[in-house]
Image 1 (cartoon, rainbow, N blue to C red):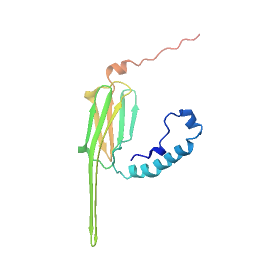
Image 2: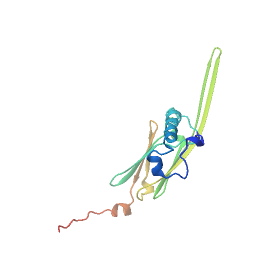
Image 3: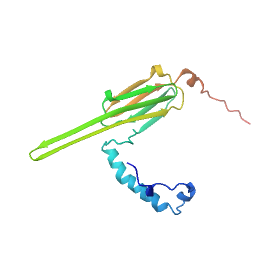
Image 4: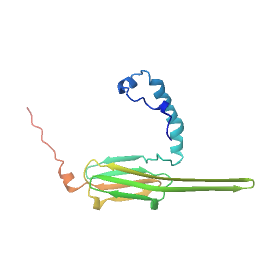
Amino acid sequence: MALPELFRPARGLRRREREEGGFMRPFDEMRRMMEDFWLTPFDAVGRWGDGFVPKVDVKEEDKEIIVMAELPGMDQKDIDVTVTRDSIRISGEKKQEEEEKEKGYYRRETSYGSFERIIDLPTEVDENKADAEFRNGVLTITLPKSEEAQAKHRKIKIKSA
């Protein structure tokens, strides 16, 4: 959902001028209120528009990277994950249809949507040992670090002066 130009941050104004208040402060506050009011509820109920991007957490541990993506209402068969040594691509497509028929009442809603998210990883991984699990709308991908990436870390002894 695109916001009217009036509610977008002004081009050409320095960031500091906007942060300190300046002329654009009321417009920035109005834009934030509009986004909070209109965009958040639609995302929360799972309506997919042109701008759906799943929320993703990336956690680096000693020997692996763990990526968790929220994909509410999706089926495992509609999700595609591709891994390279330094990035991961998560994509999917969703089609949802609802139909209600009662005496004197008929309602049908159909929503379609697709997304693609490419995440740069903080270190190289062994893509051949990657593992993914999908449970309750959350995709968890475990990516073991490559031997080279694990070997790059070493403890340094601190000398006293």
